[in-house]
Image (tube, rainbow, N blue to C red; front, top):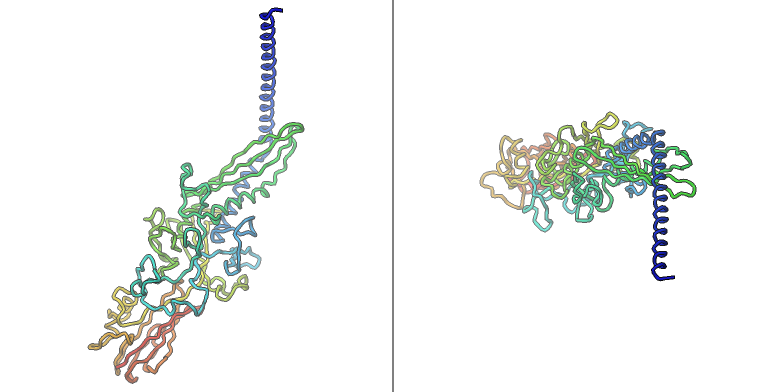
Amino acid sequence: MKRAQITIFIVLGLVIMIIFGLMFFVKNSTSDIVLEKKINKIYGDFLTSTNIKEVVNGCLVKTTQEGVLLIGLQGGRIYDYQIEDGYHIASFEDVIPFNFTGRNPNGTIYNVSYGIKARTIDLPHKDEDYPYPGSLVEWPYLSFEKSKLYENNPYAHLFALYPLSVGGQRPLLPALCNTFGINRANITYAGQTCETYSPVNDSVQEYLNKYISQKLESCINFTFKVVSNYNISSGNLSADVLVGDNDIIVFLNYPLTLSAKNKPPITKNEEFNIRPKIRLKLIHEAASHLIGRYPGNNVKADADNIFFNITGDDPSDCFNGASPCLVNGISASKLTDYCIDYFDCNLLDKHYNYSDILVIEDDKSIIDGKPFRFQFAIENRRPALDFIDESVGADTYYNNYLKSVSGGKNASQLYNKPNQPISTSYNVIFTTPGSAYLYPLGLDPDEDELTYTYDYVGTVGGFTQVSNNALIQSGGAGTGDSILRVNVSDNEGLYDYQDVVIRII
């Protein structure tokens, strides 16, 4: 046979093989298309004939509301006895038991995390800064350096303690968002970002993600059936919470797997999202600025400014730095000494009976017909006695207070007599016989009512207590220097004092 004839047969063979290959490919492709159409029809019929979408969406709404309620009632955290990998309560004194049903013995108990704790655990007596040695300044410096003298940095700094964490000191209140979550600032499609982030999964966002993802499994509880010889089952779902400016958006990816005998399983993903109008970002930012000490705060608030009233004052550094924190619809109130006479606090040390609970409510964020409630605990902190001395500065709070109660006299006019030089060996000077008033002034970081008591360390005499915080000296004592201990205490008994050296001439 000639070579040309052999070549023709080879070419014909290749053509035949290609034809059969194309026929096989077309057949298989056609089969795949038919199978895909069949699967899509089965899946579509399944969705049409069941209420799976309504079940999942209803559970997504339900678990989101439950999670947000827990976040609000528990100071921004959900605990490890409520979800897997939740926040662990190391001690009963880390939380305050709270009954949301009006102190009903059968009501659910929620543990409220602390947003503010006292600076020292050596209550009620030991603290390196007590008795408080200097004047309290109404507009304190933004920072306090221990290396500076008190008179050079007169700041009421000692009223809260923060733990060290990544990046330095930050408040006890958990951050709003997770550093590696959907609200990261470098994700352009997020649209909104948070003010505070946590890299250690201690964030409101992370607790909500965990709660919704874990509780959806048990909530859905859907009974799947065999459809056209295909078994349909659910896969591992995952939820993501995006914190918006005036709402939260919850995304859910819900996989459904179709499997049949001798066929590979096929997974279809159903996506759900809800957008409840809960102003979580505004409320959390208000809470963090009322507490103070977040990076970027221009106004130091309740955590370290003894003059700040957490329910009556409103920082103006929220929402990009130039707005009030309690915007329209958001209000703050306080449950004072919550645990006193409350049976669920019996395991706590007596000191924690005097902790307050700060409640922030938003009547524009409604859950189950009620305003959303965010609250955290405030540990009772000791008061400070403003420095009693005739030479206190004209800009001090005490000097202005004296003017208000003495008819306009400042400290030197009220206490110091003509031709008597100001001395460091005594605090105030009176003449005898005569009449003179002593006006001690204590301040409490928790706005507790204060009680004043007096004790003569030396022989002063001639003083009569005319009110809770006023003494009158009406003569009768000898001349010389004596000491009067002025003590100021709150309702728990936490106190500050000053041994006032009185010179009588």
